[in-house]
Image 1 (cartoon, one colour):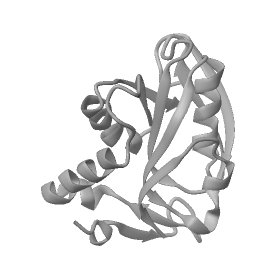
Image 2 (image 1 turned 45 degrees about the vertical axis):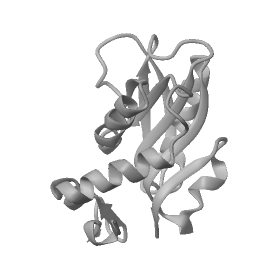
Image 3 (image 1 turned 180 degrees about the vertical axis):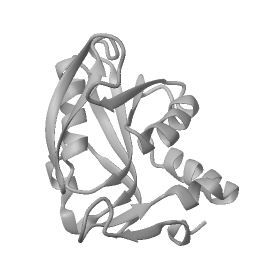
Image 4 (image 1 turned 90 degrees about the vertical axis):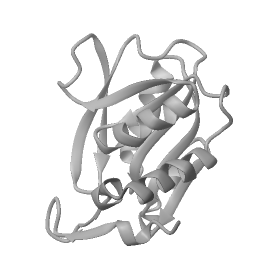
Length: 170
């Protein structure tokens, strides 16, 4: 199924001159949502080869948890600063319209665990790189990055140190 008709462009969000790729229309259409899940699973490593799936706040949680379930892996959220209740480690990063800090629970990843990182959009790669740094600080290995959308013109893939799977490119 072609998923592009379910991606909506929102101009000037979250600030002027940014065109935000809104995936919520995809989620509210059951057939498109199911097709996206199946397509994402198809580009993932085989079940059993991943120990944890990381979902990046917040849209990465939606598909990331489904992917984890389908791969028989655990699910771990990576959140913006101050959102996780237990002891965390942090990583500052830059994105196309500012900077932020991501956090993960200190006990979320064990030494040697194989990790898939999932998020909705790959733009400059700052969020994905910061997430990979968190995983590596905890002793995990990023096996693959998965995204619904890649904004190719921002060249975010170039800074990532693992294979990248995407469903849609702009």
